[in-house]
Image (tube, rainbow, N blue to C red; front, side, top):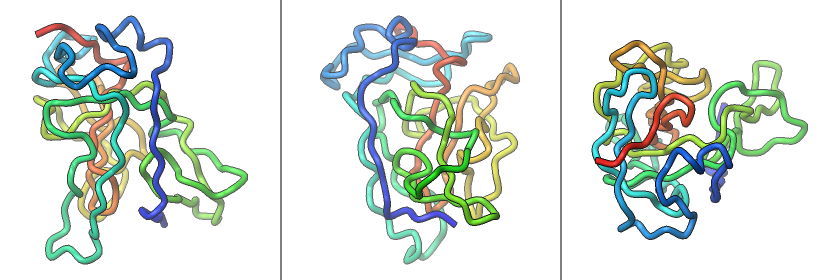
Length: 189
């Protein structure tokens, strides 16, 4: 019940993230100083060194309905990079007055009563290529045909047991991992 053709893109950065990331001006070039994201609870590194993009890229077009094998789309964020999501992302989803994208780079999503939904999840997530994450385990993912969706909220556990991220990996969704700005922190490598 979602339509991948309607997509949105965010830019900018919420105030609560300004102290968490070094030298993070929105126009910062990709060759900026790299950071490693670690679990805020236990300090376990969750990524290798990543450099900041000025905004979350548009999700690449992927004709999942024509694919020979179901699987994730190409990643929204290139390897070695991260971006800050300025729009609400993930759960909770609430009824909207008018249809529109449920969250950035996602199409429309409807509840069982046929009413459009939008995200009122957190802002300021750190969006990375899922292949850049280390030591995470999938937990309580919302139902999908071949991957995880962000509709049920955070679904990635650190080794210490803390939920730290939301994976979007179903074939018809953008392929991205959203590290929670509240549950991870950036450190210099």
